Length: 355
Image (cartoon, rainbow, N blue to C red; front, side, top):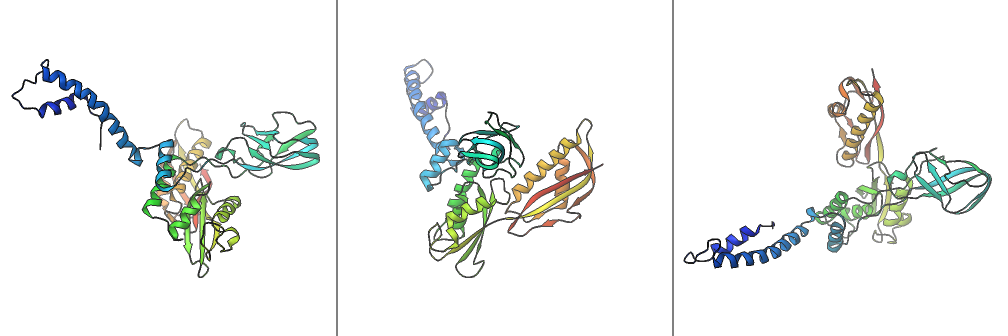
């Protein structure tokens, strides 16, 4: 490992290589001339140290990391994607392409195209900004910040979907390391996994070879939040690998390989317990803290561990801010560990806090 070195260290190393028959004390000719040489060498040494750091992928971030992964294996950072959906408007007037609809939290969506409305109409919209934040729940897009003549009200009957954040440094690094440690080649399992994870929104995939006989492959995917993928994401991956499950080689899969893409199943985990909260804590806030810590742990388990320990759930509840103690813990109405299949991921259901 190269490290930046002070001038004094470089100078001392030079002086140590010179015979002691010469005077090397500070103020003498040799000391002065080697000081100048050491200062010049330090600039070179610092540049070498900086370049050495850039050769170690674990030290890289941002554009430097992406440049490294692309230069070495052709792996680029997956971009962010905008959420899409539709709003239902009522009234009599014209919604123009670009007209704005918003949530109370100022998450904006614009109309994809113009539409004449006479009573009620569904308008396709796209989030103004890319990212997960655009995946807002149903009945939340209820504002028109700029009046649309004749349109009285709006809402989204269904959740907005398809919004994803740009791939982070840790995700890009892990995808690169996975690629080099288990190289995809000739349609092997690693190849199908890599193809699935190339698609924006996919965080991981589980591959089942020969799942429905010879020349068949099943790809089970989860989204960026390690939850079962929605239909749109499943279709995106299907089109990328084997459009129409045709086996014709029109996607990434080779000719003769019939690939079926499906979302992971959800193994829902419902929690109930009597929770003793610390003084001064709002119980609803404590409940949110419990939900956050449990959901985060379940996310980490996706496609990596296929059971949840009853004891660990109790330990995580105690880790949540505002929790002093608990009793009568039930996980899916039992006190046993919970298992899921390899095609499922754990998903937090309801958390019930009893007195």
